[in-house]
Amino acid sequence: PRRVVVVGAGMAGVQTAVALREQGFTGTVTLIGAEPHQPYDRPPLSKAVLLGKAEGSAFDVDFEALGVELRLGCAALAVRTGAHVLDTSEGPVPYDVLVLATGAEPVRLPGTEDVPGVHLLRTLDDAERLRPVLAGQQDVVVVGAGWIGAEFATAAREAGCAVTVVEAAGRPLAGVLPAEVAAPMTAWYADSGAVLRTHARVAAVEPGAVVLDDGERLPAGAVVVGIGARPATGWLAGSGIALGEWGEVLADDRLRTGAPDVYAVGDCASFPSRRYGERLLVHHWDNALQGPRTVAADVIGLTPAAYDPVPYFWSEQFGRFVQYAGHHTAADAMVWRGEPSGPAWTVCWLRQGRLVALLAVGRPRDLAQGRRLIEGGAPMDPGLLADPARPLKTA
Ligand code: FAD
View 1 (cartoon, helix red, strand yellow):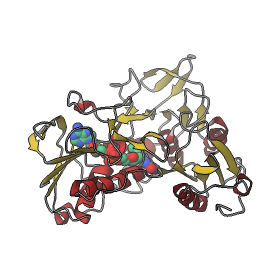
View 2: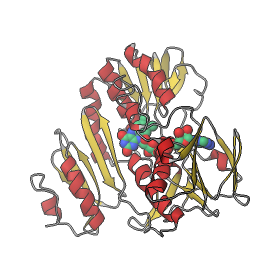
View 3: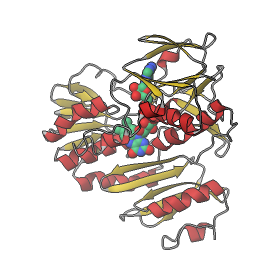
């Protein structure tokens, strides 16, 4: 191919452009992004950028030197796969290969779309709007005790805001972690001085207050909604490109879509994992770093191995470094390493005696060793695994 067009100038799109050049692609690379800003990294948005400790988080990539044409403030509107043309707000863009990397969009709280003072946290603009809320030490209500809610609450407490987190489920991270693992995290909120209201739902947002379904009014100078994200693929409707139940592009094990010469990578796409025996939709940074290497290799014709990573992510919350590698289901056996009430512990998940996932709190060595063990797939001794004083190894 001579012309590769990448849609979405986030981590996955930028890394695709970089990987193409690293792997020797000499044709044109055009990177199209809807946001007006120089491409930037998202994890710092809920951390240093929010607190004003960093101005921004632009990627340290010299696009000009790489020979990558950046088209910012340009939104893809549709794709005509037969004609190999991408339609954008700035006109049609022909391609030989198209890479979809449009990421995800946060889910809005129904009925609050136009209410002033209700924020999301996905973009640099969102973070910049939230900075004065923290600097002004306003009372904040966070809706959703997921990863974003926890990180925002952490930053807001550090800034000195009064923070209430409203969560519909009975514990934090209810959709992601089993009750036993999430339960100790409930205490993290209280220890930081945030109030966590579980089994609570927002009935209405009024100026200066959030009203819960039991009638209680929580004072709120600002409301931050962190109730999940969905692939940003609405613009692909009618393109013939197959989408899954969350709207994600259904890619194959080399991140190709069913449409000719169209790939999909990062938060907007799922892929079949042989390792885990199911399709994975991963909304984390490492997947947006690794996937592009497979895409670039396949575009160039290097026939890469199937994309089947051990997913990895981290979160910094309430003074703790939380890391997770792998993928588990409710059917997998859990083994604890250390006391969940303590400052550092790990949970391992075993399937047929092999390590498939682990969550490490303040134990980065467990994470590093565990990640390799998951990759290797060697059988584990659960008895030895449970001893936190022993390094994580097979025997
Ligand atoms: P995105 O980063 O969403 O980039 C997609 C880009 O495409 C966006 O800039 C968007 O504007 C653009 N776009 C969308 N539609 C169109 C269109 N039609 N036309 C043109 N452009 C379009 N992960 C971790 O592992 N650890 C963390 O600590 C962590 N912290 C995070 C904190 C925050 C606040 C957020 C929001 C995410 C965090 N993540 C973290 C997740 C991680 O940032 C994402 O997984 C990663 O950004 C995914 O990269 P992506 O390129 O696939 O998508």
